[in-house]
Image (cartoon, rainbow, N blue to C red; front, side, top):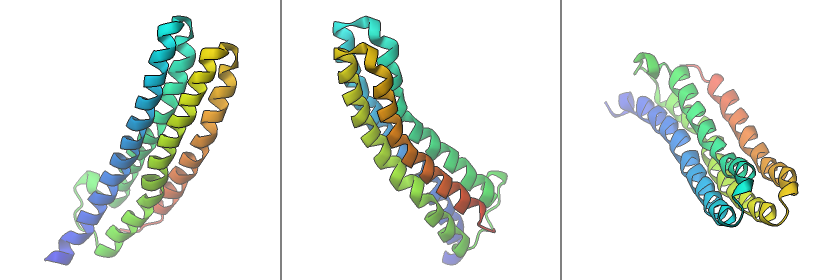
Amino acid sequence: MFLENLGPGLTLLAAALAALVPGIGSAKGVGAAGEAAVGVLAEDPSVFGRVLILQALPGTQGIYGLLSWFMIMNQSGMLGGNMDISWQAGTSFMIAALPIILVGYLSAIYQGKVSEAGIALVAKRPEESGKAIVLSVMVETYAILALLATILAVFSIQV
């Protein structure tokens, strides 16, 4: 009985953590950047578009996590109601989700910090917002690599 439920349980846990943990990181990153943006906007409302982009950037990891949730649920067949998943497949889904769970969370937080610094740059030199965006996007690279690793791993699992 235990092993019958272990596969679906691990698969659901993998999917849930893939959506939840990067989403928490994104909320932290977007929130921190938003706090910095509000301070800048109190002094110069004309830079709203520039700081909005910097605030939004750390939110992408939450989107990647949701995409990973969907891929795990789809590949496992759970979206269609399949509950016949072995514990080995469930464990594989859990391991496949680890890159986006860990890197998604951390990169969202660090991207939020870089975005905060970029917002401070925009406060002093609004014409340099492009450079601030590029620096923040550099952190995004690792979230994209983690998403790619999770995608490739998920699609290699046979249920």
